Length: 362
Image 1: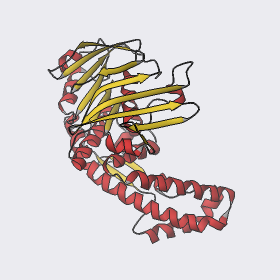
Image 2: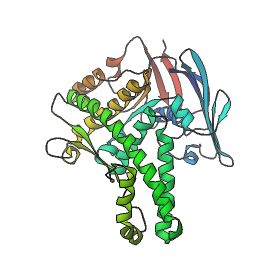
Image 3: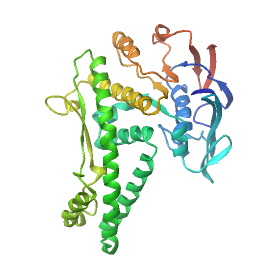
């Protein structure tokens, strides 16, 4: 699976372009900060996920405009797909595959696996438990097509249950708690399975990247001890009074924790910035490898300035452990030693003020 060309109209600072050639296994986007390199990656990400990793739909529109459209042509298993995402202030967002309207963006996710490596990945290492849960949910969604629907159902029941608790509308609370327990149990079971797979790959990867200095594993701490749905229900009912006083659900998958542990405890609380970066990179590598394991094919990779903060030796080491991909896009500053990573399968694209120029092509 590989992007062949990409088009964009009124998207951030990018100059409108149709069918820009990106038909190569590796594409290096070279340009100064603010020229549009990351925005180009976000075009690809938005086409695959149906949403941006940078901004809201309205913020993606160029100044003075009220709509945008992005599209791409992609080869997949000898088939050619045309994918598009568009947004209009009046009509909202629309998705299409081969010019056929898609009503649920999960169809894009299932069809177009992409892994983003970004500076912002530090947020799920040193950040909140919510950030770590979001990473886990994304990973599980890439590996299990039923996960997205399970997560949506849980969030819907969480919202209904919280509304009932906050407003003391107790006539439906028992029904909401029953359904909440069902989806909570299912969600935690799915998370346990993916964490088991993810942890081993992560442990091996972070050990190699850090030359054996980090011996870590993932620890999943569910808020509910979910031996059965009945157990979940009983645990929630035991704290019914506390939840009514708080006006919110105090137990459930929305309170789950994930830790990066060594023999002492959560290592992220003691790690240096370099070690935190290594953990983040290892998690993304593990995410890609587990996808390949589940599906027997490799995702597309987007690397947004991930080598920038690493010294030369660590850069070379990281490059050696990159997981296999069907296609990879990298952003570099002109001063970075990107030429050291070139091979015959690399396309170089210069980026300047939202415009893109092929320096060479395959």
